[in-house]
Length: 141
Length: 381
Image 1 (cartoon, each protein chain N blue to C red):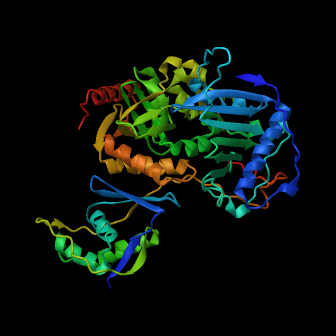
Image 2 (cartoon, rainbow over the protein chains, first blue to last red; image 1 turned 60 degrees about the vertical axis):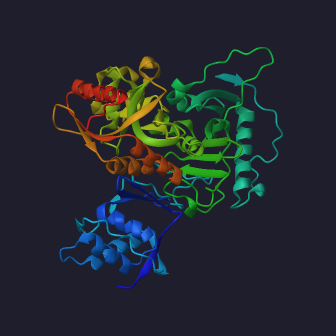
Image 3 (cartoon, each protein chain N blue to C red; image 1 turned 90 degrees about the horizontal axis):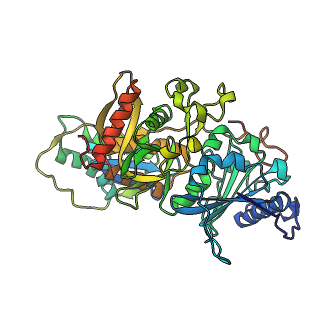
């Protein structure tokens, strides 16, 4: 692993934190996502420019990992975010102070990017067969 | 609605493709405006004004073919006639929508000024979606919508009035109204809405979740009905405000057995083998319709197997996860402001799952009791 940073893919990706959960939308695709617990915390760290190594150290400092591989979990989460085009690689992370640990450490659960969709059957245009003499489609729903 | 004489304006390029310019949104807009003017010059003008989320919106039709198709769903929002002194004129509408069809006016919209690949599944036309112009073509409805945000003018065109599908008759002009209103802080959301002037609830979730049946069942309660499917929402007020947009409802035909009082309001009784039942609740239930109310909670109906209806409190993020994807799937694209409005709603009001039971009286009683508790400031935990 390297200390590569990632930037949130704004402006097409918009996100908010609500009652400790991060909700994210890709305005281009309409796809909607959420992250909770460690996932929400890691998103916040990623937003402030922390690199992959920093994120793994953050997990070790803030959670009881019980022997689970924090680095692998971080890498899997970031890979999922990249695959959905929610974040993009932004080069080496600048050195920043780590977020301070606040006493009690929760048990670490590998974060999962939840994707929520309700996309209807979208119609696609067949330009050869479905455009009439006006130049406009006549597609039946 | 008042028929007025055709406009007398010079029309120089009917059907003349030499003026056609590929890829220029401004020229396309002017051609659309010209095509409408030509249609109106031949077929006459019919106008009707509506008050939608506090905004006066004028529908200006070329000829009589489209008003019976597109106006019944908005009839409950018709602007009241104003008594005027001599020489006094109405304030101009905030938005004027020009509507025509080709079959009776003989005027087509100008052909697309873009490649076929620019038709997008979300209906917006790639390259023709930046301010001040939004252009959309809905495949299936085959309706062209053009909105000029600076001029506060829009155009709507279809080939034939008879081709407007039943679901668009029940919720017409969604793209134009959503696109124009969202820039004014009012957003179309995929949700039912029932309540009374002091407060009410939104019913959110994907199709088949029970929104419509729950909202329509509430016609038999002390609460009033604003929507079963689409309503308007602003979070610029505290609490947020829901506005009625369409006085319609839709259910599967089989649901009529459970909601028999709706039979007189069915508009498509002869086509229930291929269409959902579409109800026009105005003028059948004028006293049961409400124009707006403060939103006190977000409810996510789920069709349950039990007789009794149950309520279960959920997190704001869970409520948002039900409301947002289903709203996005119904909109021509989503803007950051649409999303932030939904987030603001979920932050401000509690969310509940409503396990809808088979006993209709218990369902309506549960929702009514919840609304009363919310208005009293005592939401159930």
